[in-house]
Every structure is written in structure tokens, then in C-alpha cells.
Length: 186
Image 1 (spheres, rainbow, N blue to C red):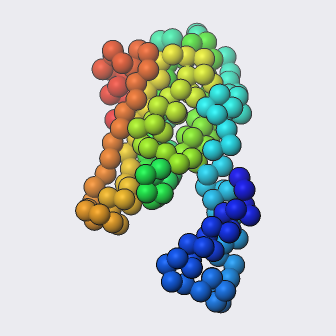
Image 2 (cartoon, helix red, strand yellow):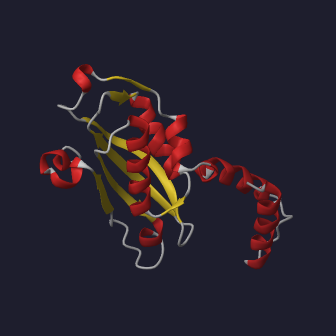
């Protein structure tokens, strides 16, 4: 991430909206914004494969695991919409997968969701990215992801519908056909 370029453009943005970027309170804003973007968009530096490799620590599943599903619910993330650079917030992610001999460490599931969200995103793509990463990291084709969240492009601007929530679901493998697996995400 080019922090100097970000600072230059944030200074120009402040000028473009009629602010004095040298006034107290704004003088350090370009640097703070560059630091914030490096943090909240960290995931842009990695491919889905990279993230699967980073957080792919697995353990042997009891009896191979094929007769069970692992579900983690209410993982909180936030992201930024690529259309308006608006905050996607109050987001919860439910992830389920059927082990195929290996299980992921539980913290790795949450870390995968967090890192995938640290990109300019669409909620639909975020669900697909998480499912793809979990599938690779856990070595299973059977993954389901449900995301529910609020989008400030809906709640704070435009229609200003503060109570609206968006739900997306991504199903891979057995999750596509099996309603019992899909219901585990509710």
C-alpha cells in the first residue's frame, strides 16, 4: 500500500471539499487515514490462497469427521463496499463445513473471515471468498457461509433506511443440496 500517495490524495480531497488541510485537527489527518487504510484493508495484500495458507492450521478429525459438521456462528467483521467506499458494519458471519479428515483450529475460522473482509468488497463476494478459503484450508468441498450486515450506503445516505439488513448465503459442495446443512447456519 502506498501511504505517501494516500496522504497526498486525502490532502487533495480535504481541499476539494473546502477544508483547510493545514488547520489544527486536520493537519495530521492524511497520515491517520493512510494508517487506518493500511489496517482495515490489509486483506488486499493477499489472495484467497495466501489466506488459506496463513490460517490453514488443521488437526486430525475424530473418525474422519465426515459424519459431522462444524459450525461457528456470530463471527463479527466489517468491511468497505467497493461501490461507495462505504462501511459495511454490524456484520455477522456463520460458517459451517463438513470435515474430510482434518478440522481447522476454531480461531482460524474467525481469522479467515476477518482477513477476507479487510478488502474493498461486496457482501456476496465476501461470502464466496470465505467459503473458498475455508474449503482450501480445511481440505473439504463442503462449506456454507451466511452473512448478515448493514451497509452505510443504505442506512446513512441515499434511501437512509436505517433498519435495513442484507443477508447473503454461499453454499459449496454438500451444502448446495442438503437443507439440513443449510439450516445449521441459521
